[in-house]
Image (cartoon, rainbow, N blue to C red):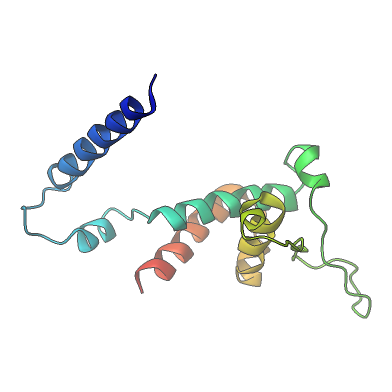
Length: 141
């Protein structure tokens, strides 16, 4: 498929999506979208990505993730504390902005940005509920 055809198909799909959004949310043509998005608890795209990253990090932290994901991360070890491990993970150093998109950097960055209370939750369903609330408040306040 030629590149122009793919781009045209994307533009048509995007236009259809944007024209359907007010109908789905019962908006008039001049209404703002942000208050309507707050109503059903929709998260912006950046927050949805952070949600997925934190969910995978929680599975790694509780030991329920695949081994290859567990192996690509290293927990922070602080020598002077009684416990040998905290709930934080080491962010790998990168030389380029492109590598910051990788999981070994962005996963720990998202996880370490959460509150210690949220990181200590071991039940996945409870974690999802509180994480979504945390990200919703962070996005719209």
